[in-house]
Length: 235
Image (cartoon, rainbow, N blue to C red; front, top):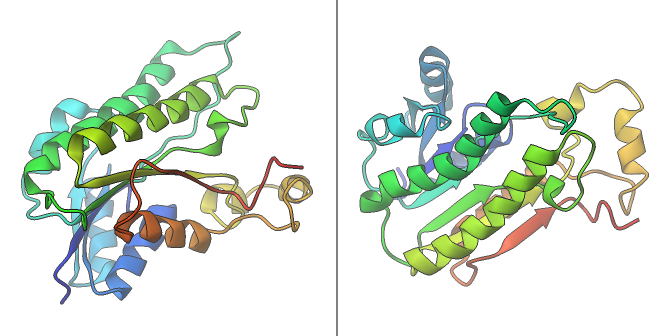
């Protein structure tokens, strides 16, 4: 059994789940969160004895502290919970926008606050927030997503200053070709993005997991916003 516990918010699917598997393979314990209690428990059980599941919806920040009250000492925190949104200004949906802003900015901050008394106050402890490349490469309907991912950059800067020596970084994935969201797209959709990526290949979930582990564990890295997109958008 490892002597480190990593909390992965949004760890029951996609990249968060792959990260949980990788942490366990490295000898860590993991706490994974998901919105659905039954599914979260089932996913944690499938990961084995080193995993614990906690039902948590960070778009409801008033519930976060209570839901995380059973979590013990924490040596790393990854906030990978996201929601997709297509919200144009011409047909702006205020409710969806408020939910997404609350989830990523208020929810991320409150999760850190709720766990702060259990986060080891050393340089070995890392926090990683997930943003996204939409902050720099907007698309029609991305106003909310682009704005929030830009806000993650500001959140990283202030948390890195306030929480030092705990390290705080952000990871901004581009289009991840083998993620569940993108892999199910119709034939030809990904090919268009590949043409605008140097080397003609999109980043993978394994690339994102590897980059997250770097930000989580490297003692010399804090207040960094790391792009994982294989140079997409440069051509």
